[in-house]
Length: 462
Ligand SMILES: Cc1cc2nc3c(=O)[nH]c(=O)nc-3n(C[C@H](O)[C@H](O)[C@H](O)COP(=O)(O)OP(=O)(O)OC[C@H]3O[C@@H](n4cnc5c(N)ncnc54)[C@H](O)[C@@H]3O)c2cc1C
Ligand SMILES: NC(=O)c1ccc[n+]([C@@H]2O[C@H](COP(=O)([O-])OP(=O)(O)OC[C@H]3O[C@@H](n4cnc5c(N)ncnc54)[C@H](O)[C@@H]3O)[C@@H](O)[C@H]2O)c1
Image 1 (cartoon, rainbow, N blue to C red):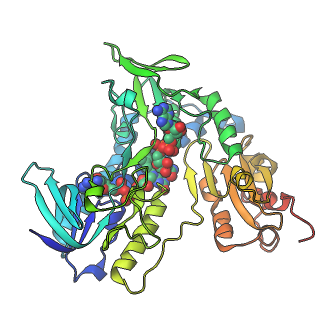
Image 2 (cartoon, rainbow, N blue to C red):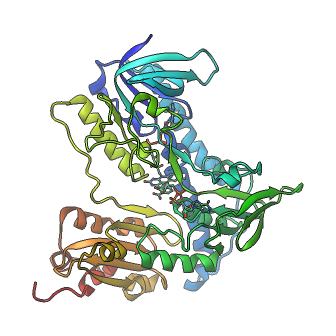
Image 3 (tube, helix red, strand yellow):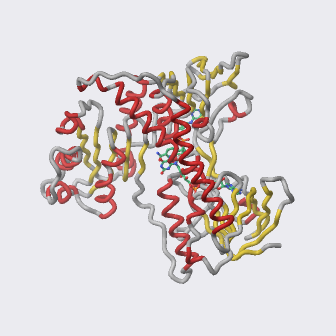
């Protein structure tokens, strides 16, 4: 039975761990899918390449407002698709080639791993050959998550897509229904509507992006209802049907929704079940995430977990941070480091963009934390005028003494514009110092942050 110093399950963030400092270790890597994991192949990177194309299309459509008349002659979907994947696929293939044939001491098992005991695995090769059992002194579980499919849809037999395959389809459907109202629904609704589909969004909850600050969620929901057909409180009530002509009929409490394609974006569940994590002795949360401590150690000595399979944040920058902590702790077990997920920012690359960090107003209210807020419109600063922006906002949440607690942005470039707020909240810069003790370039867009900071109704006595 092969035994390795270290076994890594999953080549998303897990594949970033072995570097030259592991050269004297025998590090096995197990992967049952495409090398490179979710972010590279079916997640962050291809979606944002599509979002960029969608943004270009929307910019053209809205150009008339600036006195520039323009129109779109044609959306060449297959060219957009092929540009995306001609960049990405070679990276995945190159990553696999490197680990398999070029990197020293990294045997690669192409197959599905599952635990058979503590630090013991069985790998069923993807080529159908005999399963291999192997053990490791240490194991890193970086096996990610997969789309959750509501039972009524999964069992219905209708054709449906998830984020795993929808970017590779051959044409933009005339009518697309998206089930879900979170990140993936919001991003793909933008992409497909900008690129020509009539989009319907049917979500279970009363609003879209409900994890956001309440003002951002409600403003975005209103905008989305203007742009797409939106049904809230609309979880499927009966199995969807598919007619002979391919039309899919989704049933919810609002009635029957007809479309030519169905995209399910109803959350992602950790892959711990398919890995038989429990057979490996790994303690699990009730939602299937592997329990880890701040050093990313699981309940089994020598076994670490990171990323979507264990984290409460299904975000690539979090998975990367956790992978860096695991790498350090594997190399320097006597001087371990801890993951710092106190202030985790996130962005939704929809239209308009949304970005956030820190406490939401509802968190402060629910926890009884004293707070003040300020909502500053993009349209109140010069660059906002230049953009003719009417919907962009910066919402800040702070303690009455000026300690910044949260920042919630919706508007153009929100994912970049938020970075100074990430820095301020992470390093404890207070609102007054941030606003007044540095220059803000005039008339650049960050002036909306400056005005939001200056507008916070802080306690004058402090
Ligand atoms: C559509 C979409 C868009 C996203 N956009 C963003 C974004 O813009 N920004 C952001 O921060 N995050 C984004 N995310 C989230 C981000 O992609 C994930 O948080 C991140 O990729 C998780 O990394 P990971 O290493 O934990 O898992 P993964 O990258 O999923 O890697 C897990 C790997 O393990 C393999 N594997 C699983 N089980 C087994 C097994 N039993 N045996 C062998 N191999 C196995 C899988 O095939 C996979 O390659 C997006 C996700 C999706 C789905
Ligand atoms: N830009 C980014 O960083 C980015 C982009 C995409 C995905 N992600 C990550 O991937 C995760 C998964 O994304 P997601 O959008 O699938 O999940 P999500 O948790 O963001 O949203 C799930 C949505 O589906 C709805 N829903 C659940 N069950 C339903 C049902 N039966 N019928 C109708 N609606 C239902 C929920 O109410 C919710 O609105 C995100 O939480 C995020 O962490 C990040």
